Image 1 (cartoon, rainbow, N blue to C red):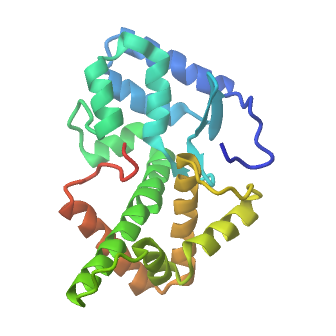
Image 2: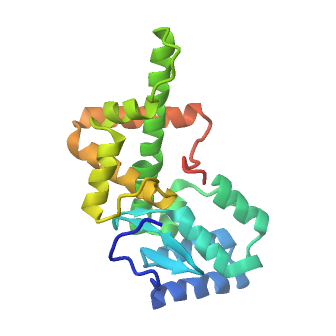
Image 3: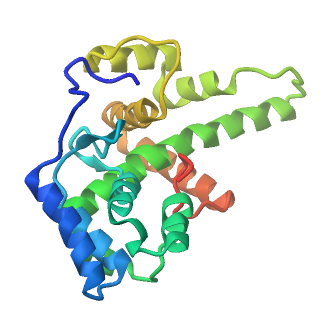
Length: 235
């Protein structure tokens, strides 16, 4: 896995994180619904990354974006069968929570800091990825209307339209800034981080009306494809 040179493969969580796990278990046993207890445990969690049972987890990107379902997966694994397996799988794989709570209730339970990080991840990773897919779709439609049958690199054209540069150049710049190795492939973890970097790059270098227009385009694409609040990265 491609990680920063400074990454410690034995990254350990803090005592507060261990307390969050203990609280999660105890709360379920005390009768708190497991989903509510999960959100409360996420509010308590501190570590941005961890290596657990040989797997590297990156929960918080650039200190500002929370991959909350990845953290939920880690916490659910820690409580085993204390939470119903079918409900856990529905949440982790389809983003279908077992309780119908409002946005304000979710925000209150998970806490203001985590909620803002959650929004950063949603818009900066999932919606940003949807923007690229939406523009790819635009390119394909334009080519069909123009009668061009030959398949072209729609991804490359999408990156140039959205970010003003090629994916290859942007990925190289991202890796240089983060002191990552240059590899021929990209892992899912790095793709998420790169996508968030692209979001911040776009916001920094685009005028506000263009940023708003592109975000709306991505949200419309998500709705048209029936994804709703589901994550674009298969979660």
